Each structure stands twice: as C-alpha cells, then as structure tokens.
Image (cartoon, rainbow, N blue to C red):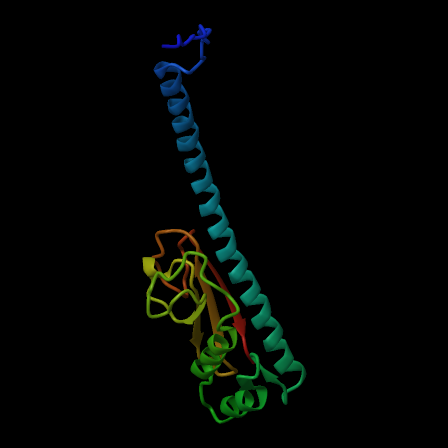
Length: 187
C-alpha cells in the first residue's frame, strides 16, 4: 500500500465583518433613507404647487391674449378654433349671454394642454387641468376652474386655481390664501 502524503496547509485567517458592524451600517442607511424621503417629499409638494400656479398664470395670459384678439379683429376665430369673435359680438348685441359658450370653448381649446399636477382629484375630470366651474371644496385641488359671469358688454371669465388644501371659499370673492383668482373680460 502506498503512503499518501498530506501537505500541511497553512491556516489563512479570513477577515469578515462582525454582526455588530453590519447592524450599525444597516441602521445608518435606514436613518439616511428616512431623512431623504421626508426631504424629497417636501420638494415634490413644492413642485406641484409651483406647477399649479404656473398653469393658472399661463391660462390667464392665454385668455387675455385671446380677448385682445377679438378686440383687435372681430372676425377672428379664437380659443384654438373653438369660438369666433363674430358669434361673441352678435350674441352680446342681441342681449344674450355668451359666457357659458365661451367658457366651454375655453375648456375644449385647452384640453390636453395642461395637466393637474396633483393628479385626478375628481375622477370624472381626470388629470386635465382646465375645467368649467368648481365646487369650492378640496376636490378642486390643482384644477383651474373657468367660471363665466354674464355682463351686458360681454362675459367676465373667472379663472381660479387652488394650489394647496383646503380649497374652500367663494370662487368670485376669493378670501382663501390657497387660491389664485384672475378675471378676463371678453368684450
């Protein structure tokens, strides 16, 4: 029988992390993650508020320009081709109130151009930002409400956006600091 020689193996000491060290690292990562999530959440809320305010400002500027187009040329078609200035002036001249038709034309013209940064607070409306009228409650959050009021010389369009809860209050006599309101007179 042959003798088998065994080589004496050197014992190599392997280095590894202890359980305590691993637990400390996991705890530190957990603390950093908690701080990061709360900080990021604040930035996200501020971004949504800024986007809602920007929608309000852009829609107001657009409607002011469209009202001016009618004043400069009564044969213009405005609101992305959804309404004509000729119709506006003929309804006013006959003593009618074109406010509802103008506000519907505004909403139809703006469909798909602005999104509610807070998502679909009211599922039937989805996340489209511009819509007619409002409720004066929290489901208005992020929507830009187009609300007409008939005047003898043409409709006054109220544009209001709630950018932070609560969203209560009167659309026309705004006293809520969480809402921005502007008005454009189509005359």
